[in-house]
Amino acid sequence: MQFLSPFGSSCGAADFKTLCEDFKVTEIGKFVPSGQGEHLWLWIEKTNTNTAWVSEELAKQSGIKLRDVSYAGRKDKVAITQQWFSLYDPKRISDTVAFDIPNCTILKSVRHNQKLRVGNLLGNIFEIRLRNFTGDYLGLEERLKEISTRGFPNYFGPQRFGRKLNNLPKAIAWVEKGAGRLRREQRSLYFSVLRSYLFNLILSERISQDTWDKVVLGELAQLHGNHSVFSIDNENIALAHIRCADFDISPTGPLVGAGNVSTESVAFEIENKVLEQSQELVAFLHKEANSARRALRVRPMDMTFFQDKNDIILKFSLSAGSYATVFLQNLLEVHDKSL
Image (cartoon, rainbow, N blue to C red; front, side):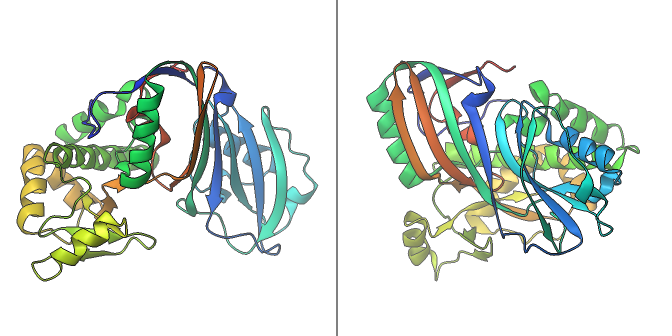
């Protein structure tokens, strides 16, 4: 599954995830635990370890039900990551447990009055080493400067679609065969895969029309910082162009579902052109999922980069739900050595 980039050819090539320590991720939470409450929050550093598996180990070693262990988001396995987990533990069973989870270190434990929920994140900080870089370093510098101002396309990354993108054809086939019964987790996964796929197609179309970082008439623009959207019409489009150029607002694409606040005019025509080619998937999602909007672009913040012999070191933060791998794909031909 290839999607367009607005930046032209890559600036070179490099190896990614040669070692776990080449990819470091640190969560940026929405709030700090209070120190009191029925939930035990654990700040854990894990290396080359699956997030869901760590949850299973926490449940097993504490004697708490798996459904009472939660996290804000799954992190890459082949990486060093720091993230929160929470355990619903009003009886304080886990206070005396000496957790021993392979490749994991508990850096902090603190009580809080709420569970950690999926999406309770502002974003993530990334520190990435790209090894054996070959290419145009000055061109890479210019590309990074352009992205720091203009942003990059907010595609869902390949990991959303499973190893070797296998979950996408499975999800499409499932719908085509009548969407039979599945485990709740699998059903939810297929919903996410299908919505992400359609969003990516629309974003690719906006790139082909050079409107991925511009508002058009009938747009539902998103205000940065609170994710609220508002319609762009003839009366406000001139000001919206200025606000978009200042990265105060961004154009959006649909996460298809029921109750969608529809775009109009030019924006509707673009979205409809793509979605009418997947009418069966769209009809299914309208019945089964709630709609949402997602910004078509994202801008890395606090970015630094430098060359270390033959390697490139990048450090930056992204808002929750955006993918560092997509950022890299807009820079270089990246060879993922973990696959």
